[in-house]
Each structure stands twice: as structure tokens, then as C-alpha cells.
Amino acid sequence: MECSGPATVVFDQSLTEYDFGPAHPMSPLRIDLTMRLADELGVTGGRLRTVPAPLADENLLATVHDPAYIEAVQRAGRTLEPDLAHGLGTEDDPVFANMHHASAHIVGASVEACRQVWTGESLHSANVMGGLHHAMRASASGFCVYNDVAAGIQWLLDNGAKKIAYVDVDVHHGDGVERAFWNDPRVLTISLHETGQVLFPGTGFASDLGGRDAAGSAVNVALPPGTADAGWLRAFHAIVPDLLHGFEPEVLVTQQGCDSHIEDPLAHLMLTVDGQRATYLALHELAHDVAGGRWVAFGGGGYAVVEVVPRAWTHLLAIVGGSPLDPALETPGGWREHILERLGRVAPGRMTDGREPRYRDWREGYDPDAWLDRQVHATRMAAFPLHGLDPSVW
Image 1 (tube, rainbow, N blue to C red):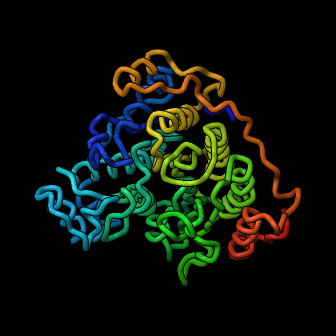
Image 2: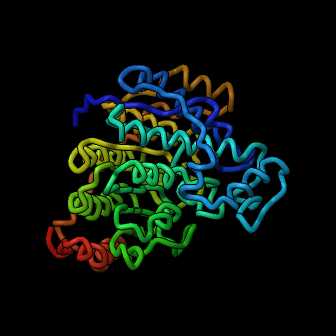
């Protein structure tokens, strides 16, 4: 889809100060390499304008986090002492110096992306450093200290938005965002992820549908290990478009964790960059179909720091900017040389994995013997009636 609206990426180098240390999977290097690749390919600086990331103050953080937790993060970042009651100092979320400032900066960036879109300054806006979807109201979880996504959505609500849809395609269930709006019918959260039967955080099943006052506000598709492009896209298109068209949000907020890739070391799905790119294109099209083009896109997980993250999110930024990259494009020589000199590693030579992301449409039939189809069917049966949709009709 051609898109000529104004677009921004919220970024400055200080966002990479969110750093759990050299042995931690969530290396800030993945963001540096992404922005370097996007710059060298001309994705940024043209139609995609870069805007600086402000710092979220305590009042903004308190819209989604308990004041006592904010104080605990500030204290831990000064003393470097664990606070296990608040999830700080664990293997997943080790304490680091100035942790509050670095985490609040990501929240500020994500809220700025939401502000850009809601005020009309941008039609699309992205923060690839954002997407910290596991943080809870009073605790850190899963590499996430503050929940920037929840803060951004809450900001939209507080500034007049009536309906917001959130689609999370990270390999891990978007539990923190779901929990923040569990009982709020103004927010529809949809998460497609590897099943919690085998993967952190162990939640997000078809029967998890939202609180008493917001039945159907949460939708979950728990995918089997080994799901590749064809199965993933089959599930996505069987669930997401119908629900978004029925809900009619004013803004589409999405989280594009790229840890669903076959080379990611922390999970068991088997997508390629081609399949991930197809997802980003579909989300962009849906934003125009259901939300007047208003789209806020975040990063998230992704731990194949050289092989996957920079390519996947550069495609995302190109789509946000309205100029998708050719899948056959080679990666720039300067970018590859930088990786070789800095890391002693050979970077990918082209921007995708050379696959054709095809899938069998749900309308062609449901196979009850297939684990994937059973999961999709369970989600449709549980969630669609709550939105006035017939799960047997497509």
C-alpha cells in the first residue's frame, strides 16, 4: 500500500543506555545496528523523520506503575542492590546504574510516538527501542522495567482516545499490556505468541478473554513450537483482521518483537525475515483500513543481534516511513564492514532470507488434526462471539 503521510521514528543515542550488561541477551547493540542499517539504506532522513526522545516524569510513569515501584527502581539504580519483591536484581532483570533514567527515557520515547500520531503531526510513528511489554504495575519482568507500551496507550486514553487496538507479534505473550487493560473495554489487546506451555511467561491462552467488565478485550493465539511463516501468517489472518474491523479502533498500536525468527536463541518458532516483513505490511494496511492510518509501532524482543534484529526492524521502519524496501536488496557494505571490525562476525548479505511468505487461508478449511489449527479455532470460538462475530463464517 502506498502511503504518503508524515512519519517519524523517535530516537536518540541515549536510548541505548538501557543496558543490563554484556552477558545479557537484550543488548543495546541491536538498536545501534538497526539505526545504522536504516541510515545507510536511506530509510531515515527522508520521508521518515527522526525526532528526539523525551524523558518521562514520575507523574507519567504513575499512570501505569505504583509510586512505590517507581521509588524502588530509582533506589536500585542508585544502590545497585537487588529488590526481589519488585522483580529487580533477577537474572532476567539485573540492576544497573541509572536504571530509572534509562527506563523512563524509553517510556518518554513511546509516549512521544503516541503523541505524534494522536495530534496528527505524524500519521505513523515508531520507537524500536520500545515494546517492553512484560513489565507489571509493581514489578519488573522479562527484561522489562517500565511498561512503555501501557504508558503510551494510557496517554492516548487520557488525551481523548475512545478505542485503541493493540496487536503484539512478539514470540512471548504480551502479558503486561494485557494485564494493564484487562478490564478496560476501550482497549483491545491481541497477542500471537509461542504457547505458554513451553515458553515464558506461561500465559496467554484462548480462554484468557479480559475482565468481567471487558469480556473479549483480550485475545490470545497460543502457537505451537516450530510454527513457521506459513502457519504464523495463517493464524494472523484468521484472527486479526476480522477483530480489528469489528472493533474499529481510532489508533492501532503494535509491538513487533522479532524473536519469532528461526535463528533467535530464546524461543522455538521458525519465521524468516520475509515472514516478519509480510506481517509488518499487513499491520500497516490494517492501520489504514480500520484506524484512518493512525499507527504507532514498537520494537520488543529479538536476540539474534546481528543476524535478524537490524534487518527486521529496518524493514519495519521503511514500512512506517511509507517506502518499503525491496526484499532482494543487499545489505550495505559499510554496515557489514562495521560489524566485522567491531564484532569479528560476518553480517547477512541481503535484507531478507530469500523466502516467499505464502500461507493457506483459513477459508480453505480447518484441520482438527493440526495443533496450529486447533489453537486458531479455539481462539475464534472463544473471542469472536464476544465481538458479535460468527467464528464459523469467513
